[in-house]
Amino acid sequence: MKYLIPAICLLLGVCSCGAEGPTDPAVRPSFFDLKGYFDAEIERLEGYPLTVTKSIQLNGETETKQLTDLNFSNDLRLFRESDINKPAWQDKYRSEVQQLSGQHQLTTYTALDSSLQTRVLTVEEDLGVVTHVSIRRKTGTVLSKGDHQLEYDPATGYRVRTLQINRLGKDVDALIEVSW
Image (cartoon, rainbow, N blue to C red; front, side, top):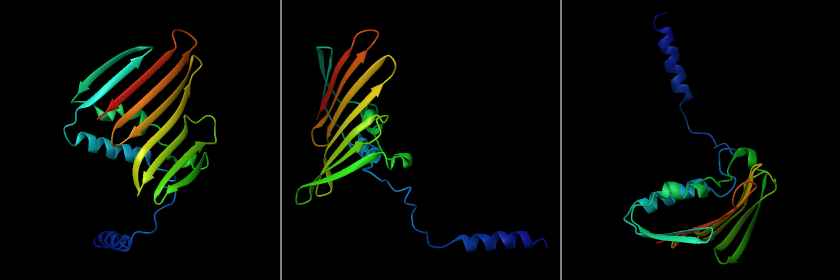
C-alpha cells in the first residue's frame, strides 16, 4: 500500500509524456504579430551603440536632439500597443494582401468595429522581411478625440503624428520623428 501512491504518480507521469499535439489555432496569431515584431526591433536597436536624431514638434515649436541613450522600449510603446492579435478580435478586422511585385507585398488590416483604437494597420514586406509599418489609431474620451498616425521604417527610423481635439484646454498638434 505504501508504494501504491508513488506507483500511480509514476504511471501518470509516464502516460502524460508523448509527442506534443497540434497547436491550438486560437493561440496562433491571426494577424501580423506587431507586438512580437516590435519586441524584436527593440532588442535589435538596443543591441548596439546607435546615435539617433529625435525631433519633437509641439503646436508649432520644434526641439531637436542627438541622443545615444534613447529608451526604445518606451519610445516604441505606442507601436506595440497597436497590436491587433487578441482572440476576441479575430473577426473584428478585415485583411487584404496586395502583391506589389515578386515577393514584395502589402498587407492591410482594417477595423470593422468602430470601437477599436487601431483603425488601420499596414505592413509592407519584401522577401518576407518587414520594410515598413503604418498604423492609424483613433482615441477618445468625453473630453478629447485623438487621431494618431504612426510610421516605422526599420532602416531609417519612425514618425508619430498626433492631432488631439480637446473640449477643455488647447488642442494638441504633435509630431515626433526619430532617425538613425
